[in-house]
Image (cartoon, rainbow, N blue to C red; front, side):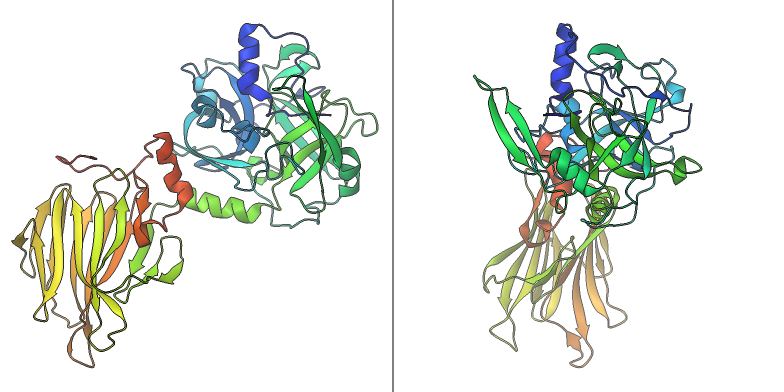
Length: 494
């Protein structure tokens, strides 16, 4: 039987405590010792955003100045697969603290989580390999100045990221005595030994999970394959044969790390996922950070990136914001939606026509932009024209529009004509390229879109749909990300 340090967990545990927890609730770091004061600058306490920020419910680590790593089971129920309520899914975090409760705000940094990304392969439900890929990354509302913990190099399973028998540390707050409420005030730590996969398989290869949401409770046999999944396991170093220490409630998401000479040289190898039904009495299962390094790196990049570039060529081939490349198949005479904002005011579309020399090909012969103002770019009698709200814009001139401007750059170098539309967090460049061989402009437009802030609305269209979905998804939770594309003055989202 297993106990999940972050599954039954702290949303439910918070309710239990509010009603008066009984002695059946088990401890956090059992038989640990006080951690060194101010040693672990990267340590993170996840706290319910309930108006007070007093309720610590999970652990995490700072892995980048704006990103915290924790267990997915801290923010999503590992059996139902449902995200926890917003106060846990988008919690407050205390970074670098030592005392669980303190009025000395100078001892830690308080941040708000504005975006949560759960590994898409996190396994939930009463199925085999339950809790595989139990990892999540949290984007903070502003960067921390605390020193992050280091990540290990990529090591795919079934290889171990460290030699078996290596000693790791784990830290956490919570009750210090099994089966008796006694939350630790000072950060606790304990030494744990990395076990070979064969021992993990012996301990956890066949397990039983009980669904207590039904009457009578139903038991499920869960099979776990440690050679193919992204899990590792550890046991208390001091008593490996008859262990009596380790994490428990309140320590979900806690790190298993190799200490270095300083906080900057500490390396996190595991994220606490679940353990024995009685804290400290068996081995613990952790998420293998080294095996998931590619996902961690790419997700941190997407979360912290501040600029994205996409392009639609005139033919029209697409280079997506996510780096994808493809060609559209919309026929001549139809409108191609380049980028729209769902629920927002942005619209960027192109009218397609036939290629003069290759009639089977379609090209973008007219571009329409709407966001407060209406900008139209087209080709008439081989000349480029631009109108803003129906009024002609001459080459070499600029016109202000709501929240930005439109500039019609005059061609002086025989390179291209360009119409530049500037809006908060976004720049659009509509090019008509000069053909040196024919000594004339091409009969179509290319479109470049530069985003310098995360959109406030989900994007659609052949280009908009390539914006990384994990970035846009937060809008569904009505969280306006910092630096989002704001509505121009005088415009509305309807």
